[in-house]
Length: 462
Image 1 (tube, rainbow, N blue to C red):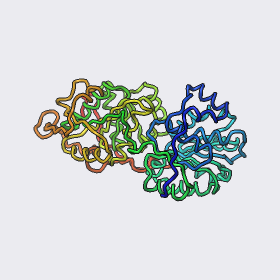
Image 2 (cartoon, rainbow, N blue to C red; image 1 turned 135 degrees about the horizontal axis):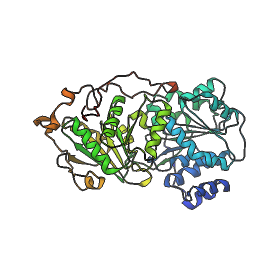
Image 3 (cartoon, rainbow, N blue to C red; image 1 turned 180 degrees about the horizontal axis):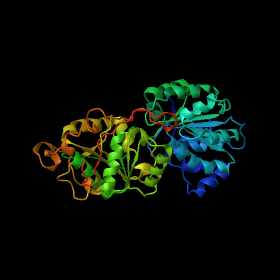
């Protein structure tokens, strides 16, 4: 990739002053009067029509950084039926809904119409929105591709194309669809790409479709946030993992826990709820209605915790998450940073804890080193009684804790449900039902199913 132009951000006072007065008023009505750093950097180049390549921390205000230029550039004109003038492509339905909620009131202030299209829901309403002169389409790749093939949507009038979370789009296998889509838009139209990383397929998209992009790399450490603390909690066995998770959630508030498998997410959510912590699960086996219901319970505070798989977690964009727990270790440093980025959003503090048995501590350490984060290590037996983020930050050591509970017997070392509990393959080995592929169309999971073990609510054992 050729070196894009890099410019200093505009001064905050000058960024919003050039916007249409209706848009300034709509932003002020939401309490937004000063741009964030990423907005101050991206908005001027976006309004000027430059291609933009941006990388910034999760929760830094990226939605408005590209949304405001799109709205400002389209203001004052109307689109033809079925011919939107801007398209914003996102990896998940939940992110499409979030962007729609953020941009719709701003679009209305300029008399612009926005349509949201994604799979798992009927076509009729989305087709009507397109025919009703939608100016901006927020879409997931699969449904947008279908609507274009069926003749309901044309990209021949597109003036601005935005690829949000481009790395996640590529991770989900959407590179061919995105490459084709952008190639169908007018050659001279504006392209804006935002991503946490700029390598691999993302680099291919940049080389192929962006012209002398203005680079705004406001996150040189690929997602590490200075207000985020990282910890490893070593426990004796699986029962202790659940106990540690319960204590951490009880002490820290709003929490996202990650498992590697769908079964693991269901079972852990049941275990937390049985222990008195209201929890919901989020994974590929759920219908769109249930996904939305569970996510709303979490974002509204009715559920204190959500247990998610990696693929499903890409749709979680909730502010004020206090804690992220890697109940099962991430597959690689990139996944670790993405998971961890669900907390410490918009400059707020956050805490990240990886729970591990002694057997896998070395793997966890290598993973965290690869992610470039500083970690405090704890042993559950000697950790503070109340596991708040503040207490964890004041204890622990720079070297890994080595618990012997799993080898010396005792409750921590006993096997679960009278066996080795290999049915749950969250720690080590291959998961029984991985979430490594995107969902099929219509909300159907791409993978198969497996029954797995179940948590007994009566005696609180596996």
